[in-house]
Image (spheres, rainbow, N blue to C red):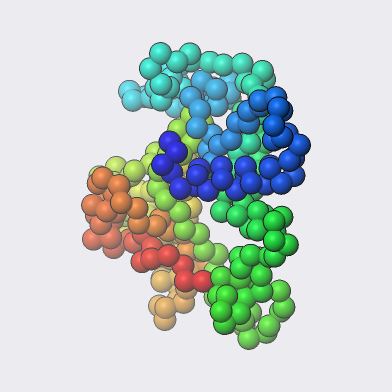
Length: 269
């Protein structure tokens, strides 16, 4: 899908860097060659290629998810259910990579695509882009290179995470499969304590992001009960708002029942 900005940005910067570093391969008369690239949270491949035996063994068995064929449910029509991943050409993944080497042995984890423009700028102009330059009055998104006590003294003692709620690892269901959770999926009374206890009861079924949000809700309740004077919890894990069908309505139901799983906005750098 070349309408995606991240893919266009990655492709453009990558080609510029290649032409600079390997100019001789682009000379007139040079043989054709191809490079496989991917961007985003996960490789854009059918599940038959991205799942491994451990996924099939751990896949939950219920009416909506048969462990014998869950890999094929997201495959493109007419595509084979399996592939020989050891015979594929190297794939340059400009995004998240897999820790388990058997998931995709030929995948090469590359820098995240937003950083490629900085590499390109440095290679062509010898300049460091703003993202990697010292923070200043004119560069608020830079890096703090010097330890300033005033900055560290004002930091909030809290671990913060923001992310979206979507199943970007559909093919690999290890660690829980539930996402797009609604209050009706959670057992117990519709109040903060009841919903948090209900989510905790579903812990083994939750995907990693929902586990993070549940952990944060637990910490917030503990802080509120132990320190009524608005002491912040040690973690603050929340989803960010995305415009997907039904998403705002689903999250609004949680908020109405006293637990906020959605951040008010992006973190202000």
